[in-house]
Image (cartoon, rainbow, N blue to C red; front, top):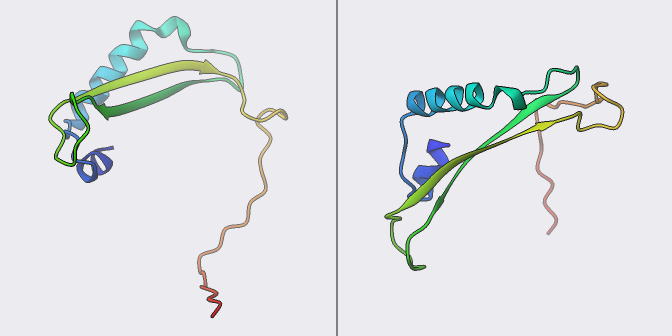
Amino acid sequence: MNLSAKRMTLPLFDEDFILDVLKKLVDIDRDWVPKEEGTSLYIRPFMFANDECIHVAPIKKAIFAIIMSPVGSYSTNGLSPVKIKIEDEFSWIVSV
């Protein structure tokens, strides 16, 4: 996230601090953590600029937030594996 923040001129943050905050948040909301097989807690940290105007300049103010939600399986078949093919080489095809 810091790599993206740097590229977009958003403030960088201390990763250890954010990890501690996230652990505390999950502890506070522990009743939301699903316990059934095939479920999980979706965690989405995000950050966005909230300067008073839109301009082409480094960002002065930003908001960092974390949303969480219990979720079931993303697949209608449950946690069955998906077949994939992994290539370790690639080629470019150029049409002229």
